[in-house]
Image 1 (cartoon, rainbow, N blue to C red):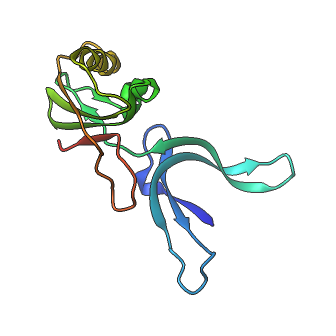
Image 2: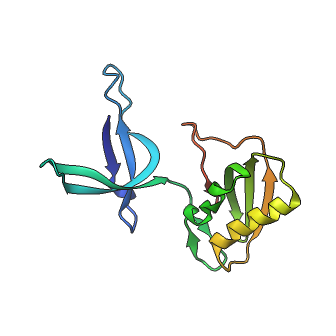
Image 3: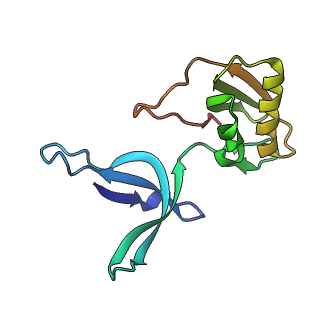
Length: 158
């Protein structure tokens, strides 16, 4: 597998979109496949073995949309990743269609009570800080996937 990045997607922290080319199928390789992950690279990495070259120094993970909040602040999906450690939550997705409103869709490991909804809202709100945002929770059987079969944790249509 050949790993590249797209320098045009570099953000302020130095992370870029990863692109992969599979060299396994020589007759029909999948060239420059954008996998949805982001990484920070060192283009002149010095390995202990003596080699120098390109190396991934930090993997950021999935590229998701940023949440835009009423104050004008943007928040990374990692700010609401507290849900990933909640034993009630198998998968989740936050969908933002308005500045002041989020829809939290949850594939749960159990039937969620109204109390569970309140606690999940509190977890998301903790990641958002003092922002005045309404969060609607719904329990679903499954979440939509991208064409590559991956789930986006945050979707913003703003």
